[in-house]
Amino acid sequence: MNNIVVIGIGLIGGSMVKDLKKAHPDTKIIGVDKNVDHLNQALVSGLIDEKSDLNAVKTADLVILSIPVDASVSLLPEILDLVSEDTLVIDVGSTKLDACQKVEHHVNRRNYLACHPIAGTEFSGPQAAIYDLFKNKTNIICEVEKTAFKLQERALQVFSDLGMRIRYMNPESHDKHIAYVSHLSHISSFMLGKTVIDKERNERDIFDMAGSGFASTVRLAKSSPNMWTPIFKQNKTNVIETLDEYINNLNQFKILLERDDFEAIFDEMKNTNRIKDILKGIA
Amino acid sequence: MNNIVVIGIGLIGGSMVKDLKKAHPDTKIIGVDKNVDHLNQALVSGLIDEKSDLNAVKTADLVILSIPVDASVSLLPEILDLVSEDTLVIDVGSTKLDACQKVEHHVNRRNYLACHPIAGTEFSGPQAAIYDLFKNKTNIICEVEKTAFKLQERALQVFSDLGMRIRYMNPESHDKHIAYVSHLSHISSFMLGKTVIDKERNERDIFDMAGSGFASTVRLAKSSPNMWTPIFKQNKTNVIETLDEYINNLNQFKILLERDDFEAIFDEMKNTNRIKDILKGIA
Image: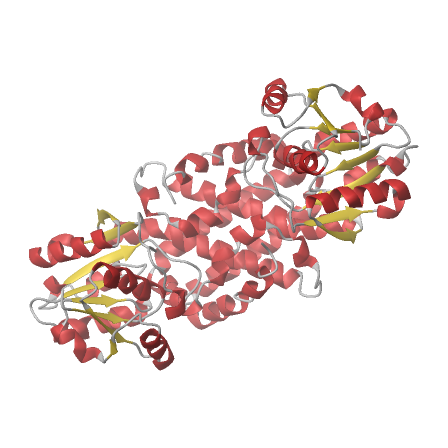
């Protein structure tokens, strides 16, 4: 690859080009970002080799589209309008159906591969970019058959450079299941943070009582609202369904408490301990 | 100290005596546990120097009572019946009001110091015991004025050996606030685990989609039902109150989604991002 254009030089895009530059030191990394500060930071810190604008995609071998999902879906057709036949465009968003539908009939649909690398931290911006963020993590690819063979091949090489395992899935299934294993966790964590902050507003010392358990459960409440608001918007139907089930389970638990049915409470927790085995597969 | 009796040789009791033996190599550690396997494991692995029964507390300098809170509250008066004037008894439970009330009028009340070291992991049993579990963690002490001066002094030395910072609080306040910063996190996590497991029962590959965010949020769902059922029982009123507020916040978030009020959703998340500063103080 001669050059990679990264649109949105934050945690995900930044971490990707960090690893790719290491694997391919001669490849030029070109950054595009509406946020001028981020772009300058990325240049100074060596994350990118030069700054540019959207026209840079015309001659790119790889375009990484790593911006919030609303902006991503609206920019994707414009990018496909500009690219050459040999340009691979990947996105990294946490929702896949809207993006796939948006470019379904685009003349350059074959230049695009819909991806969701399941990796991240609760931090954002170019300073949050780190090496090996994607190592041994899962990358979900949707509608692979709609991408040109040659570009599929290039994409698999890129993901191999990043150390990722690949799973193929249709965008509807992706959005449905990711609502459970990712989007719901974020709401659960944000609302836990809100509940405690609201309650303890006048109790300055209370957080001295919080331990690592609280810190872990509420960690995702540090996440960026710029990134997460459009995800909830695009995946609204699935997210509401998961939220309904979660609220229902919490209500059931409350009813068991009110009824002093501690045997059933014990059983609920015992059954859910199965999560230990399930989590073994997750780094 | 000549000898320490640890009643319940699991994660908390085991980790305490690990550090205390290191600080005082000549002190004899005597283990008492209904679970014979745990007791033998603790002996073989060197966590304790010998096994004994409840009568061992008669000549102990320090008794660490580290068993589930229902058993702890019911055993505490029996222990106080047996101890000598110079024996310090501490407990480590996550609820404090029931214990303090239970021994309020006990003739040996002054031998007891009610404590809650805010430290732990999601693992349990003697194999889970580790060094430095309590280092730089908070220890909440309740009703310190009811403990004999000389034994208060000994307790502070023990907590200093463990590297803990001390906070004093009345048991009512402890139980109320700990419901928010600890007990609610556990319910939130257990019910998240349940929701996802129930939904994905027939989807064997789905957990491949789960990332570190899900793992972090659901971590506490690995916790022991033996330990947590009696905590929820003893702190039922406070826990139900926190759960009500949490469910209410989740319902509000759902309503915002249904109304497509994504500006308000953004604001909710932005406001809750303050948790970043709050968590800075937590290891």
